[in-house]
Image 1 (cartoon, helix red, strand yellow):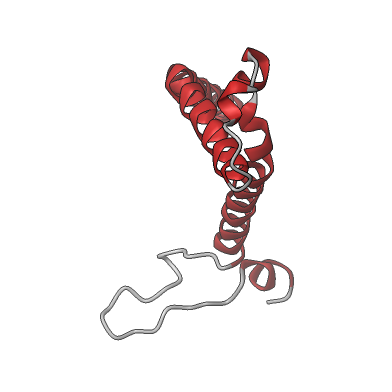
Image 2 (cartoon, rainbow, N blue to C red):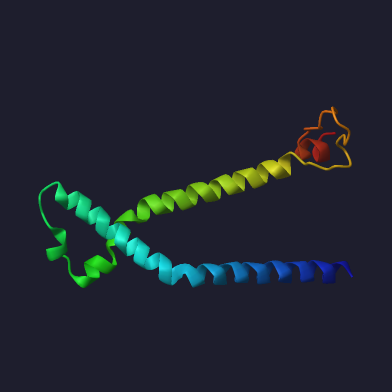
Length: 122
């Protein structure tokens, strides 16, 4: 019985993840031209310093993949946000917020004993 419940919740999580990915894929045709435009602006701002009109010298491949130079800052932002989410999830697991153990009344300080200590030491 419990195994069926666990399997059904795992299936639901997998289906919800697929739905989220499908939502992101829907936005891909809008995101790609924005990235190409930002890449071109990056090239243009750089070459304007030297009074070069870069548009005359770019071929189609260079224009379509001009956002690749912006990939490092984008990857840094994605990795930083992922690390933040993982860290905050770990902190939520460490500092368990069970309402059964914490005071529900106003003015009662919450119990902030880490879950690790509750399970292994106390």
